[in-house]
Image (cartoon, rainbow, N blue to C red; front, side, top):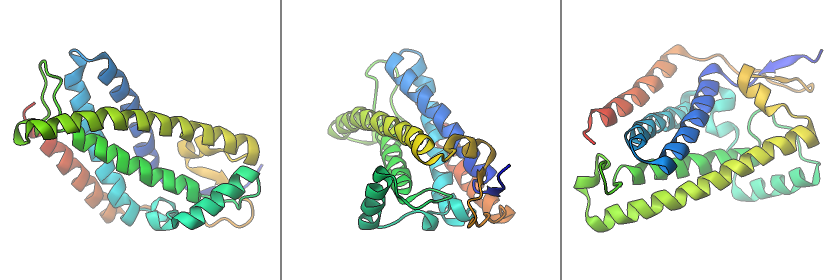
Length: 220
C-alpha cells in the first residue's frame, strides 16, 4: 500500500463540498423559480459566506490551502497547461498551476454572481436586499450579469469535471478521493501540510459568519 501524505485540511474539504451542494441548488432553484427564489437568495447568502471564508483561508490556512502555494503568473500557467495536455507535466500534491488559475477564476466569478444577485429582482415577488438602493439601470445590468455569469460558471464547472477525469486517466491522480479524506499517495517527495491553527481558523469563521448573518438580517 502506498504511503499517504496529508494535503487537504478538513475546513478546505468542508468548504469544497458545501460549495458544490449550494452551486447545484442555486442552479436548480434559479431555473425553477417560483417559491424557490426566496431559498435561492438564502443559498446565495451562504455561498457568499463560503467565499469570504475561502478568501481569508487562502491567506491564513494550511500550506496547500494558501493561495501562495498554487497561484502562478499567466506565462507559467500556460506553460504548465501545455505540458499537462501533452502528458509530461510535473506532479503537484496541491492545486497545480492550471487548477490554481481555475480556483481564482471561480472565486471571482462566484463573487460577481453574488454581488449581481443582491441587486436583482424576479419582477414578481422577490427583490434582492440591495435592489432598492440602486437605479433601474444598475438593477437591469445586474440581472444581465447574473444570467451571463451563470452560463460561464456552468461551462467552467464542466471543464473542471473534465479536468478531474483527465487527471485520473492520464496521471492516475485521485483528486476526488483526496478531497474526501484529505490525503494523496506519496510519490517520494511529498511534504505533509501543516496543522490547522485554531486562532486563525476561528477568526476566519467569525468573519464569514458575520458577513452571512448581516445578509440574512436584510429584508427581501
